[in-house]
Length: 101
Ligand SMILES: [Zn+2]
Image (cartoon, helix red, strand yellow):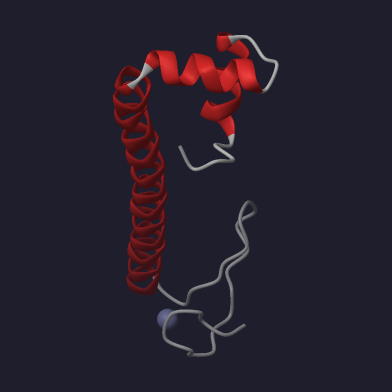
């Protein structure tokens, strides 16, 4: 058996339970520290992604009232020209915004 921390060959002591992957308790400590680091970094990455997602959502929400309050009648006209109700039109533009309004 090769230690996954220091690469030294060792004879695993079989005590039952998890198979031994490190040669000594020292290497085990290092291994645990490394695993924790990886988990920690992974958590940070996930948090970053989540924050990014949350921020873009927030930005979109912030922009929404501006564009709608800009000209409510304008939107109603646009909705009518498409044969939609105002609510339907707003729901549509909120989703994909095909005109880039
Ligand atoms: Zn080792």
